Length: 510
Image 1 (cartoon, helix red, strand yellow):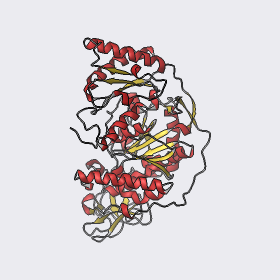
Image 2 (cartoon, helix red, strand yellow):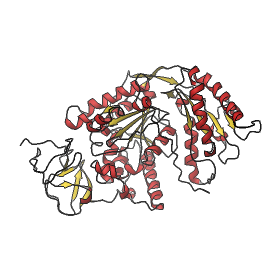
Image 3 (cartoon, helix red, strand yellow):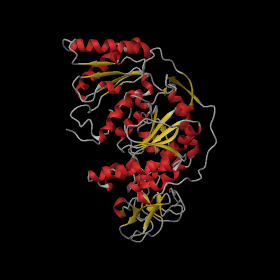
């Protein structure tokens, strides 16, 4: 019988990944001579050597767990056979300035974007409607549909109207220290470059989070022109409230309709990298290809975000040495430590990650997941660390501290200033954001074939050796420029599939 290929990432690994779509049956001989002693599904691990109980199980050249029992060569190394190792001790990681390999600048790449007065660049032209309190969400949902139906057809240069609904603003401890997270998130969402500084705010009138806190402090902006209170006594009944909002929207749409795309350098891209519904291929194909593309964006002078604290925490010892200077290293450790404490207060068990779907896709431990997750950050130095809800300050690779939840992470990356999103998935998710284009990358071709109209780019060929990480990274980079220019429409925009924005609120409710 012909020997079958498996994926073996480093010479130190004692497990390999089965790439075949139907898995491999018992008795199959793989290329190093190992004979499978049981059927092993696609994406799952086979022992390439005898692994005694208590010994390290190694993938990516790192320990992803310890054997709960003796594991014979050729066995399926599933989740139940691994003991979770302790996470890296943050107190033992010392930020130091290391010699970092610098890649040559990348010049001459452009896209067509909407340039704003503050220098930021939009990839869409959107009317944004912010809310100061959850009480008005019903009316903003109503008005969003009415604007889309009655006003947008008059303004062909405006892509969409987006209501930033959320579950905050009242019934909360507005002055608690942790309240800064949701408040600055809402503030910074309203400053997103795709809104062209034409945000309108719908308030109720009695809420704790005052609408005035959500609009620009620009001296030329009249806040009264941007804010409407539903409790304003000039309104008699629902129809007058709606008329007032529609008049405000019409004025802002007139301004937005004047925006035109112009040629911008790739340095104006702010790309958020995120993965969800991950599998064992995510760290081999989609994430490394995204990481290569991330390095290209940084080389072009642009900005890249990576996030998901709980899914990088177990790779802290690999990330901190990539900090551009000790101060950045200390900030990274501080964010990871804050989240450790946050989880401890909630009595959260680290073993809750990976999810059931991740495990079915071959991911056994959060350590294995973390090692694959950080691949999407590429190899560039980390130039800054942003706390949840903070806005980007420096071009280059930024760690944006967020929970791993897809929707919360996406919301916080938007608040940080992301104007283009790359989302890598192995198990599949219809995730999308209305505020920015989301390029969906599949880690395996089996998913891409099945979800042919939901996936924008298939990184699966890397697993079979028909394309390299570099080739796929360049393909993704060129796709980013096309999507950011509006010349290519991503699947979620074609289908209108968008998730709600979700605030991270670590503060108390009252």
